[in-house]
Image 1 (cartoon, rainbow, N blue to C red):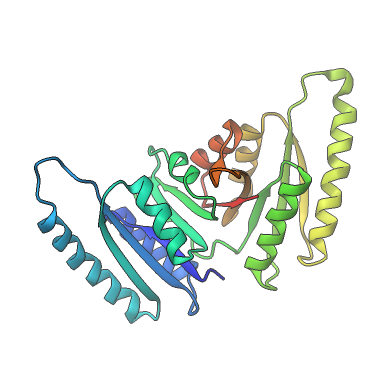
Image 2 (image 1 turned 180 degrees about the vertical axis):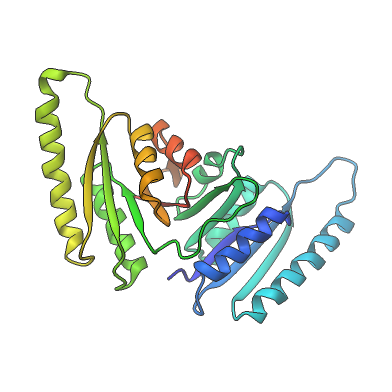
Length: 265
């Protein structure tokens, strides 16, 4: 599914729980977990002892992963995490970055650095999501032809023939009541085309057009559907190879109650 998974680990209880969840629910025998622990330099302080301590802790975690059949490697590096993580992601050829954070943390700045798929989960009280994020999937679609095609092409590859309950959501904010009916009908027709295309490789796929601000209505519907994962597509800044995260995408990623799979498009 994912050949190499980048996992930034700060050795906190939350990051250890997140790593264990990834090993059980996302990694498979063909995957390799790439653990990266970054120590930021402190003026006047010798970071050598800190590096050795972190390496010992990471070594224990590596042994635990190996014992359950998960291949792994690790890096303990001193420097700026916003520079080091993208460098390692590219040099190692990682195909996914997993980010686990506290509910109050802001994760979007980290996503912007690397135009690669991210699996993001913000935990409340350290509680991990239920097992098997692929058991039911919700996709937030903006109906941009290029982005929509990329998102579903990547999702099809990830599922690798597995058929799952899937719901495609599109939310439309309509200010002008005179044209709202026409806009809604046009969106419904476009969404049905997408659904019919996905139906060919994932039978039973459903689709819904919602009325209102996407960052509100999509998350409200996700709360009711309770999917294992919410999928969103974000644009890439070609020159800098960074993700462009608008206000809607940021709100969905930061507030989602379930893991979010972010696919660059």
